[in-house]
Image (cartoon, rainbow, N blue to C red; front, side, top):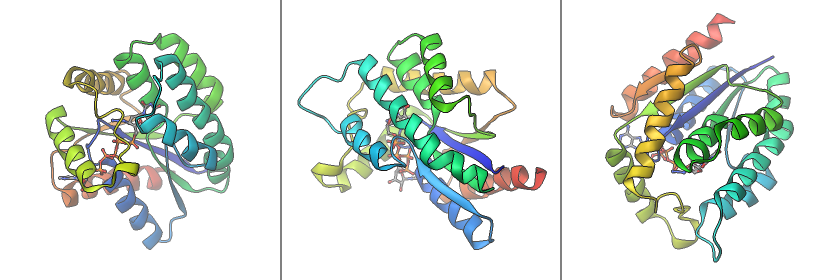
Length: 214
Ligand code: Z5A
């Protein structure tokens, strides 16, 4: 069985930059790995991602949003993640079930117990071996995200969550820190205010430690 590592954090925390660098580093060293993302990672997941992240001509209610994120996950776990783990790969996943607890639970206010039940159903109780949480003041993350969005064309902005107010994003940060506090063995909290290079050294340190422990 391989190893499953998830990357989490507020918008603009730099996790996507880091997951690409971490995957490149594993590939260069001949360690079999798979980089994937949520929502996304499968053909169905990419279709759902479009609906979930782009502003549409309809209201997406929190309950609908929850079911679409978890539907994408059910497909992703079975089609991509479990087969890669069975092949012994290190699976690096940009967001996983913690994102649902934090965004749909702590921030949107849906029942945490319902979300936990739904998530253990869709993931078949699969949990990451390690979760890297990139922690950063919300204002810094949103500035980074807005600069990135401004560089993109209108069709691919994926900015539906970006329009939420500061209080929403602060709840996300607090929610993640609470989860990290509750599951200290699984989470590694990384100060994401550092340079891309410094962060990559920290990420590599944690991943190598996990890989070499096995
Ligand atoms: N969501 C949900 O609600 N429920 C769920 O169950 C799941 C997701 C799975 C999409 O996630 C949205 O879906 C997300 C939560 C919700 N909404 N929000 N917010 P996503 O992960 O695809 O999108 P994202 O959170 O907006 O992440 P991102 O766009 O991939 O950004 P990032 O990973 O945080 O950062 P980045 O792309 O690596 O960097 C952002 C910019 O900062 C970029 O221009 C970089 O060049 C720059 N950057 C990166 N690192 C640094 C450092 N160290 N210094 C300075 N600048 C940096």
